[in-house]
Image 1 (tube, one colour):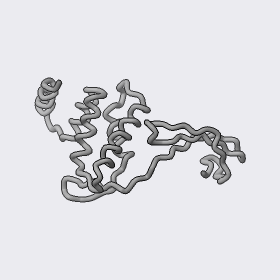
Image 2: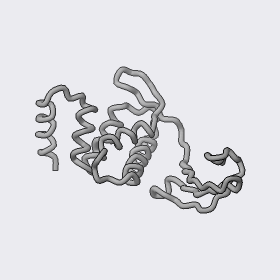
Image 3: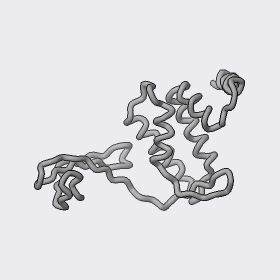
Image 4: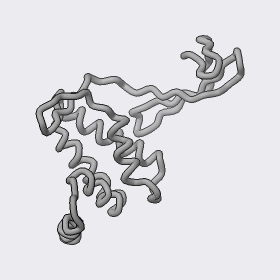
Length: 151
C-alpha cells in the first residue's frame, strides 16, 4: 500500500481489525520512510451492480453516493458516522443478496427510506421531500399524515 504522505510503497501493517459484522477489515499502517500512520479499509468486491433509473438509463451503483444521501438526510442529527457506515453496508448487502445485477433506483430509494424511518423520523422526512420531489407545503402535510398512521 502506497503511503499517502510520501508515496513510499514500503508500508507496514501495525494492526488489523474486523468491522461492520466482519464485512470489512481496517488496517492501521505505518510508513517507515516518513513515520506517518494511516488507516486502510478492505472490503470484498462483488460483482458490479447497475442501477436502472426511472428513465431506463443504467448506471454503475455508487455506494458513496448512496451514503452521502443518507448522511445529508441525517445532517445535524444525533447519529454517529459509524452507524451511517453500518446502515449503508446493510443496504448494499441486501442489494447484493438479491442476486440480480440490475437494481431499480426506486428499490434503493425505498430501502434508504426504511432505514431512515428506523433511525430518525426527521431525516426520513428530509430524504422523502427530495426523493418524492415535494413541490408545496401540502405535499409535506400529506406525507406526514401517512407517517402518523405508521406503527
